[in-house]
Image 1: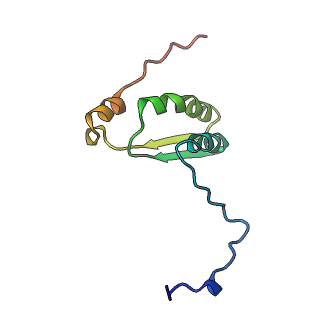
Image 2: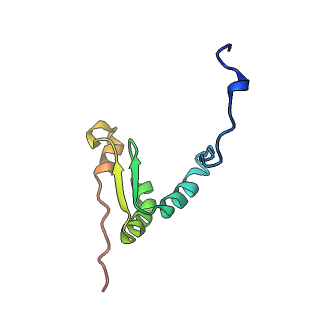
Image 3: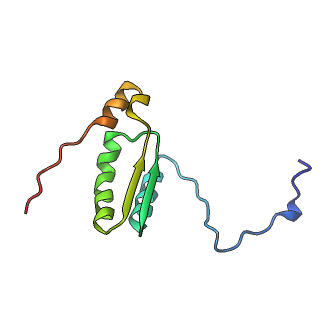
Length: 100
């Protein structure tokens, strides 16, 4: 590792974000907080999103949209998924009628 010289490593400036690793138990809690902190737009790029996950995230997306935050979700074409995920990616959850 002659290319690596510790004396050249600088302390990061305090304005840089701190990197924290999350796992399947901690990710969505933090992700939800980050979403709710959005002020202008949210862009999510994911190869797929399950019906169960979308059902859980939908109220958050609706809250964001209602406060004027633009929400973009980019995912793979349904035909590029396995059959199970293709069905889920094209499924439309039946919405409850709005009560006025």
